[in-house]
Image (tube, rainbow, N blue to C red; front, side):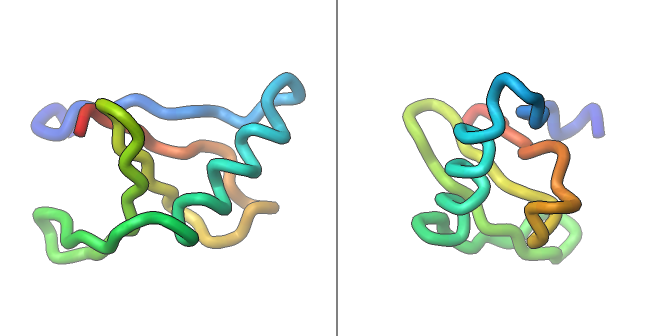
Length: 69
C-alpha cells in the first residue's frame, strides 16, 4: 500500500487500557468513509491523525491503523 502510507498502534502489555479505550472510541465517535476500493471504514479524527480498526472484535484485534488526516 505504498500509495496509502500509514502507521499503526500495536496492543501490548504496556498499553492495554489505552488501546482498548481507542478501540471503543472509534465506533462511538468516528465517522464512516468509503475507501478507494469501495469498502467502508469508520475513522476517528484526533488532531493531525485519523485512526481506524480492521476488526470489530477486541479479542481478535492486535493493531489499530493511523494515518495523517
